[in-house]
Image (cartoon, rainbow, N blue to C red; front, top):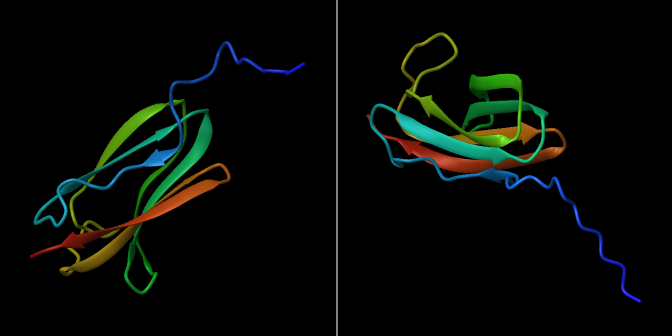
Length: 104
């Protein structure tokens, strides 16, 4: 006998952090992600040295796909210099980080 568990209310979403578009970018870029359950979500931008540049999202979100725009600015709204930046998604115990390039 093989036991198979079937989840009738299984979400169509999975954990995913997509590559931003466009990248490299000049003025703004879009970061898309999805989560499969209601969780506290935090989306942050870091410089290449690991210093926090800006927090884009900190809130509890429902299972869905999301898109956030980053305009190449810091937490005070000031433009950041051209360079390589990392964006990190933390959702519950899951996390992922990707790289983007800002041109000026």
